[in-house]
Image (cartoon, rainbow, N blue to C red; front, side):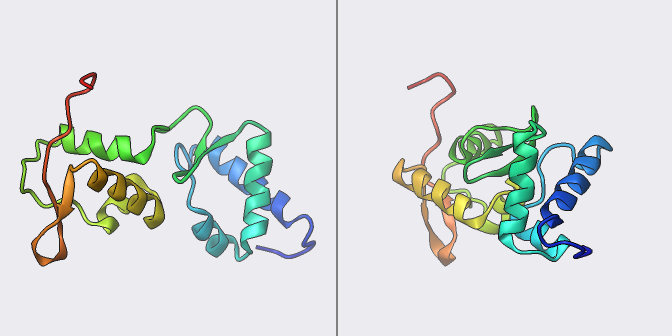
Length: 148
């Protein structure tokens, strides 16, 4: 990223991201803040200012613990709900190996911290538990949607 003016760098980044969104190069989830820092060679505060600018303009929205999305796209439900749906919809059985943290990060495009929080909630609900070989296993199946 050219450093003509440190004060205007965040504006340049926000404009580049806006152009990618308008061109369809970014259609749903934006890269993580860490990835944007690497891509543009800037610090977290500069990336944060660029994202806040786009949010103020109504171009993107943020989802706590999940990331940034193009406005009007993406699954905004909490990660634990999306992982529960994964268990419900993928035909898993009790005793099956639960996906690793890395697999969940890759599948949902979220941080390891967000995945760990969702896993803790699933463990608290008794749906998964640590099994053999330090791999989590499915211990119970979630109720069908609408059953409480």
